[in-house]
Amino acid sequence: MRVLITGITGFVGSHLAEFLLAQGDEVYGTYRVRSRMDHIQPILPKIHLVECELKDSVSVMQLVERIRPERIYHLAAQSFVPTSWNSPQDTMVNNIIAELNLFEAVRKQGLQDCRIQIACSSEEYGMVYPEETPILETNPLRPLSPYGVSKVAQDLLGYQYTQSYGLHIVRTRTFNHEGPRRGEAFVLSNFAKQVAEIEKGLKPPVLEVGNLDAIRDFTDVRDVVRAYTLALRHGIAGDVYNIGSGFTWRIGDALDELLKLTDVQIEVRQDPSRMRPSDVMILHCDASKFMKQTGWKPEVPFAKTLHDMLDYWRERV
Ligand SMILES: C[C@H]1O[C@H](OP(=O)(O)OP(=O)(O)OC[C@H]2O[C@@H](n3cnc4c(=O)[nH]c(N)nc43)[C@H](O)[C@@H]2O)[C@@H](O)[C@@H](O)C1=O
Image 1 (tube, rainbow, N blue to C red):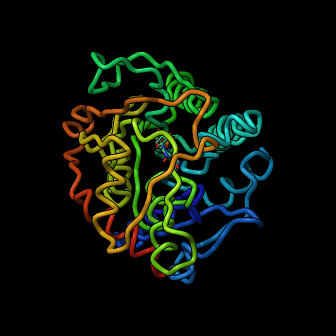
Image 2: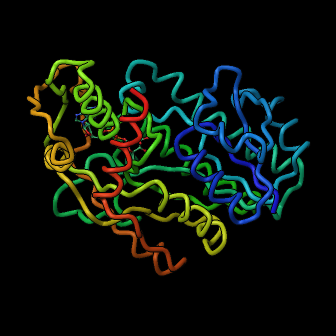
């Protein structure tokens, strides 16, 4: 199978590429001049990299014309919620226009059999009341950040292109996912990196945190990439699926679990700059629709995810 991954150099993209290579797929991926290559260094000889600016429709048209992919995993995005407040316009263009360019290229090239997965997000649900959990695909979308709004647009664009043009697009609303290679800005990876730095004496024994009362549903990235392949194998075109473990953690409790993995004494301190203008307080996934459709269930325990992330940072700081 000829597969294209947008954002192959990133956290999820690199794990997905490894998974697809092991399945015997021919893997293509997009990168930009400023992309970091360290995540994909070990698999560089096995994949085909194509330079592409997804915000540029000409660049995307040439990409799709050249590769004529049978499967596309569209992962590339501005994915950090706080950045979306600092540069909302950039977030919208990166996330919405890039996807639009991709759909238009597939449509204009007449690749009707190409299956496309789009990485939508639990952030689309945004303001969720306790009685509305666990969250089903039918829950209202009340995004609380420009990022969340951009993902709603990506999601609905996927629906519209299936309805209007018959493209085979599967929309996956993934809840928080973590694991080795997770960007250091994201909560558990950030905490794990701080622990590793403290252990090496690179930082005083004070761990800075933001809102510890938020509740998140964490899934290991290795389970998530397996889910994406199942979404394209068994998902219905135009349909939307929640992907998440169904197990929630208060961020403060997840931090306590992480701190059990180190011998050093660490003080936890709130850093006001890590607080958000509005935070999504609870995200608890009901993935039963996806599980029923595809047979997926998460396999990697949360303790292993934390352990592997901490080891990842211990080798790097
Ligand atoms: C599904 C969704 O998942 C992710 O979005 P996110 O939930 O905003 O992820 P995060 O890891 O930045 O924050 C998780 C929670 O943790 C709280 N929190 C506390 N203290 C710190 C802290 O020090 N740093 C950070 N980053 N968060 C902190 C923070 O306030 C929030 O409540 C992205 O992958 C996104 O692309 C996506 O689609």
